Image (cartoon, rainbow, N blue to C red):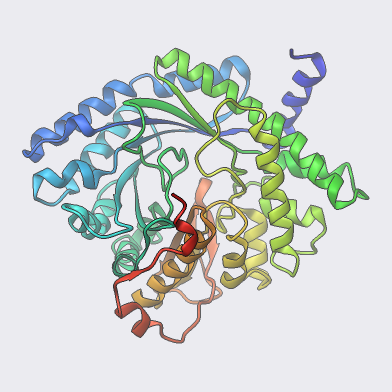
Length: 451
């Protein structure tokens, strides 16, 4: 039962503390669009997306007005296109164009699913899709791509890591006139999930319903504001404050998800509990960590504070919602978090520290700008390192790095809006090429044998 205090508190969170629903994402299965004729298949893809998502933006805007809750993004995820395009035996780029046209037609800002799952090897169509990613992202505006190269059950496909190191560079090179933005729309995963509502890694898994709604909540500013009221609390009390406020944030996500589901006539999927920051002042995960007691994010103690935050968010949110899924935790994308940007510029936050932090939070090395002369093998090794953390810890990890072509450490790339700006961060110069060129499969860890 809602009371006046709860209503007023939620209004204050929205107006003063950057509380919002980061995204409502409609997942759409394209399995019934498979056709050996690529033109027919692409037409089916366009028609299904525009039919299923015809009212998505309209309904999202209605909910915003009725409840006064900002819904920042309305998005779509689809079946991994490598599965859909395999029957065509030709370049899958026309599928990307069909996705982009459909996204524009229904008014969503991004569409995910130009994806392949190759954790144990390449099946028909996988390599063709991966090789086409640079062109697909360069010739479309709203299409996002992801590739899963490892899992706890399968191990890590080192050949796929090597391939993705080259593809990430090519994405940046093909979009150098738009600040290498192509690479910002590409994520390389280990243990990717089928119901992730967040871009650029969202896709609609083959085990999901034909169509469904997933919600991604946000609210770093709300958590930080709550902690400000307890400057002398011990760490146990801090965890309790975060749990309580996360419960309230997640209730808002549950309300939006259930309402959108009913109005669109499709099943409600999950709420992703992740704290997703933005470059806006007061909406930073890094600033939460600093509120807990760190002089600057990235200093010693950062990983422990982040582990506390991530655990408390999940414990508080899980009781507030009927279905939890996606990635759920705290995101640490450098370019999208004002506090992370400041810490990176100051030199306190390094890629090595970020890698350590990813062992205890959601996703991984996200929206990190690296020098333009970083080799494909070094990028592949970064991907392999992050995948190893995910594989061994049975969690989702990812890499979204952007080689800043023509730029060096100390310079920056600026995309504006939600993607923010990223200072070019240094990487190690010593070569991992011999390791990467060995290829093959890094075996799954012993604890993967759970049957």
